[in-house]
Length: 601
Image 1 (tube, one colour):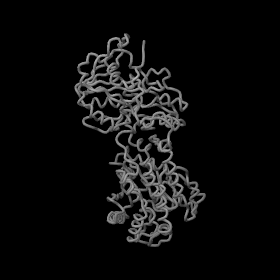
Image 2 (image 1 turned 30 degrees about the horizontal axis):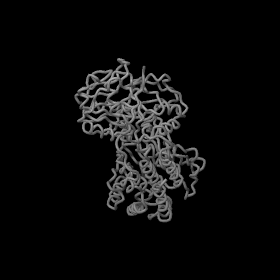
Image 3 (image 1 turned 90 degrees about the vertical axis):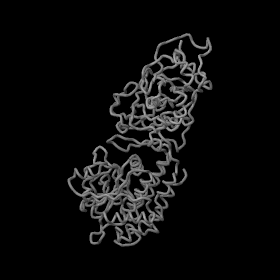
Image 4 (image 1 turned 120 degrees about the vertical axis):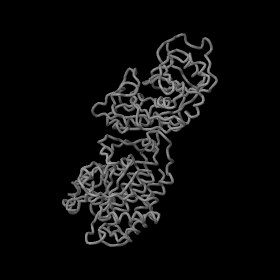
């Protein structure tokens, strides 16, 4: 005789019956689906209960709290209420001072201690097997005998009152062409709790070997499959170890109870455009996919369309590729350290030789990255360091920037030394995200020392308006065919994503606006946080203030004019960029980008 315990409104009594009796009412439910959902148990001293509850509330992704028992009410169930069936299969792990010291079939021998303890029920969110079926994928474990492989990551959970531990995740390999369908099925069935926290290279989570899970049996990724990771309530086991309480218990991985209690954040149902995810491939080495909602993606596509106009009639419409702005901004959102390169010395007979297209867009993007608390710097040619340093100082003084942006320059040396300069702390394993707006590197034009180093490094994105800018090698053939003198000016260096705009500054503004949209997107924000820690409210005030504006960009261009920086096309020292007046062209573009960004979906 075996049965599954149904935990409904009888939670305290049911839990007492469950953990005090040696019966098969805790079952391996890793492949069970239907109206009931699996949950795991954690039992702690009453003194730690409030802190653990807050710890769960701060890390709702891996630790969705469904309910808890009341202290001082532990008792054996009434005679005759328990099945006569007895088994000796372990159901619990016992923890003493942070160490797992054994497994138990029941907690009956600890009935006295349990009177001063509290049991927590943590949801396992949703049935992955049901999502696989909905996406048209077979179960990897048809018999349902093995719990899903789970791994300890290096992603820290938010700590609280002695509870601190890394995130634990489960993994399933999914065919590339089924990724988006599966992610949507998971979100539809499990809501926020069904959303993956990472898709791609496990080392980005600090997981060295998929063949060595911390819990469960390893699953091999076959060719054409991508590892997908979800937050796991097994994170609670690390929390038990960290608090080092004299006595605690937890259900063994793979042994769960079935309940119809629901976490409100895991509510399933019909998804709105704000919750329907899109999956995008943003890096091949390391392999990395990102996700954003349909509504956020559509707004960024609108930004891409806005900046894709061709006021100079150069033929840039032939260079446009769909979703380059979306993928560039997704990639940039995951970066921690960013170098923005700028400086295009087009006026060699004047001092300074720089043009007004580039620095405003670079500064606008850097300002927004600062608001997102990313490490950011602008890198320029050594010759132009003093100019850009003064520009930043004036921008802070006039309120364009809240804080100064570091201006870096490469001092010279070997290509290897330049590569080290472009990596965080000189470590080649941690290259900084490099984004040229625009960067000068084209046939027949001067090649700056740090630009030459960039040719040896992969980098995600570049912004340009004519095809001769760093990164535009991705559209080199189109430049040669459709842009005037394209066979001479076409850049050979290819970025992963080429953001094409009528004016390069517009590309910088659009990237800042796209980041605002992504960080205001609940789907993408949760993915960035790996479902741990609190989310910031959409339209965070600091982000809003950091967006480009007509007033700030007018001041920024005025600063360049004060320093005798000229328009790239006309050579005029005045309020214009690429020969286009600020008030009749650029101001309208900036306002339109901001209006699209802040529009309600």
